[in-house]
Structures are given as C-alpha cells and as structure tokens.
Length: 363
Image (cartoon, rainbow, N blue to C red; front, top):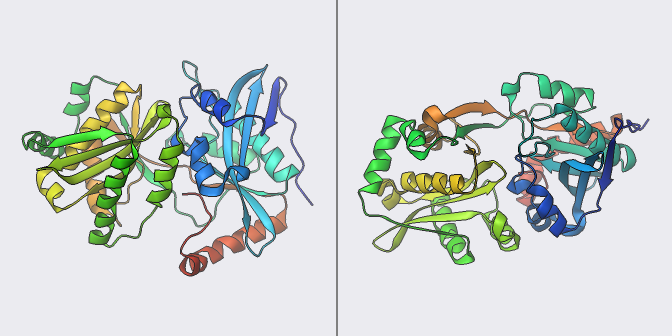
C-alpha cells in the first residue's frame, strides 16, 4: 500500500519545478543556511539539469523554504530516488528560525517525491545532533527514518563572528605558533576564482593523494566544472601558497549564506616545512568574514582514519569551535517493498563501487 500525502498547514503552498536557474540563484540569497550543495550547478554538473528537482515552499505567498534534489534511477531495481544534500533551506536572514517551516518542507518533499512520484527520498539535512532529539523527532513524525548502519559524519564548526584578533587568539597555541612561523617565511599567497588557479590546485591535490595513498573522496574535476558554471557571487575561492615561485600548499573554500565551508586542502613536502597551509586558512577566514560569514564549517573530521587532518583542523578551531556530529541521512519510502529495495541497494553499493569505480549516491 502506497503512502498518502499529508495536507500542509493553513497558509502554506508548495511548488515544484517552477523556477529558472537565475531565479534559484536569487532565492538562495535569502537563506542563512544556503550552501554550495544547494546551488544549481552542483547537481546539474553531477547528474544533468533534466535530473534536478526544486521545491519552493511559501507561507501567505512569501518564500520560506526551498530544496534542490537530484533525481536518479537505481540500475536493475526498477525504482528511482531523490537525493537532497544539506537541505531543505529554511532559515532566513534576520529572522528567528521557525522549526515548523522545516517540518512543512519535509512534508512537502515527501508528498511530492514519495507519495506522488513513488520515489525513494534520501536527505542529509544540515542539522547537528547538538540540538538534542528535537529535529530527529520532526523527521520521524514526518515519515523519515535514519539510514541503518550508516555512521554519521562529524565536523568542527567555528564561530568567526568576533573581530579577527579575537578569532586568532582562540586558535590552539601550537597552531598559532605555526601561523606565526608561516608569516615570517615571506611566502606568497595567490587567491582568486579563475580556472587557471583551480588547475594548479588539482596538481597539488593529486600529489597529496598519491603521497598519503588516499582514495579520492570527491571527484575534484566535477568541482572544477561546477566552479565554471557558478555565478561570481557563489564561486569557490582558491588559495595557493608559493615559495620561490612554486606552489607548496592550497585550499578551496566556499562562502554562501552565513557559513563558510572548507572544500579541499592540499600541501606538499615544501608546504609541510614552510607551514603554508596555516597561512592559507588565516587568509580564508579573512575572506569569509569579508563575505559576511559568521561561521566556518571545516567540513569533516575523522580522528581514526585521518589523524593528521583532524589535529590540523582541531588546532585551527581551538576555542572558537564546537565538535559536532551531523544528524545523518534519513530515508522516506512509499511502501515496504521500496524500503526493501533501497536496503538491498545499500548492501550492494560496496561491491558496485569496486566494479564501477563510482556510485550514484550523495557526497
């Protein structure tokens, strides 16, 4: 038996696929929780524009929440899925967050993609578990369930709303000492948004992966294509540190909404010595503050698998940050059969990844 739509509260209306790319760009400027994963090019590059879906939720005619989903078909199972990363967006500038908007956005998404289209809906909301069980309860009440046996991501979120000198004082002492050392090394910092800088960073990044024998977690060439399609307002910022004219460290960050995000970082042996990555993070924070950001999400930590990266980010976060887990991924199904198919697909993903080298799942 398929799920039935749940009526929205009085005054709310939900629209789907009624906006253009230009309109979407303008809408994002109204939300503090806007982020790069909800920009049009992010999913258009990854799955094609014809596979995008857009919710616009209004209350008394005013836009109060939006969400962009990526639509895919699961090979061999005859079912489809809608993926939503770091959404829905529901927190407006100069407004107190209203959880009922979050609830109604979830309900609208379920009504459309699960009840009407019969898809599996998987979302990764931009919500942390330090909000107790409040948001988990809303998700459960609206028909969503946690993805079983999936470990929740963990990150550090810094408060950078204070004056820069106060932010700097709260870095870990050892981290601040490395920053001081980098500033005495007469390093050159190049920053910008153009493709040439992105290409230079990719060289550093691939060298890092090879040196540490890491598997590439995200296809950086996809991000390069995304960068080419983003408007100037939303483009990622590339930071390169040079010593004697040669690149030794690099970082790529985004600043959309009130929170900057660390997207990529890389350093080579020379960068390890001259501490260029410390200088680049300081430059990135300065840029984020100029862009109106109040927070900086260091976008993932794993003390066990990547202790070096964890200690670097923890030192940067210092007394400015908090260590949080994301609430995790949640699924919504139209019936028990699609739930079983989704769980079967999850079980097959590791072997599919080995065979295909890449899987169609949110990153």
